[in-house]
Length: 161
Image (cartoon, rainbow, N blue to C red; front, top):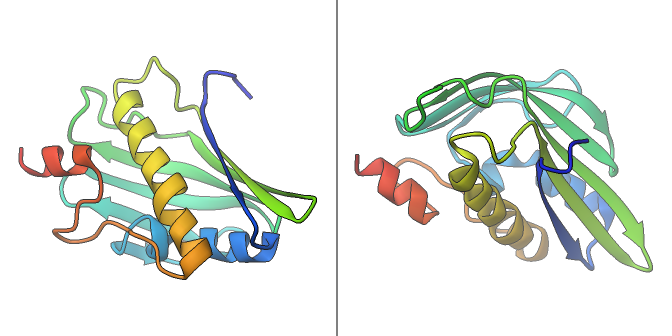
């Protein structure tokens, strides 16, 4: 793993199973605009946020309560010169338990500072992992984006263009 890949860690008192189940409920924390299945090996789903961002994702590794790896098979960004910038990258969720606490380490392998979208993507992932996914785990209700429901300042700004 490249140390420049974007990563963030979330610590919770909830079980690895609770964290795993929340991650696989992608509509509950990332976007209400998900089409397809999001929980099992080889599941594929499509994400889109307005005309700003679309991608097709395949689950390439699923170890219940331990690890999930997504492969971005196709990507479109409205706001970058290379519209396919994420294609081939791998958002990865690693779950570990230690002394009654569960750590979720999210790493978007391939999302590096050289990417034009890096700052926007870093800020968005930080919000969706540290805020929305955390709320889904701890309260049962996350803050996903959806039709006319931007959740980050960047989404609001990009939606207006």
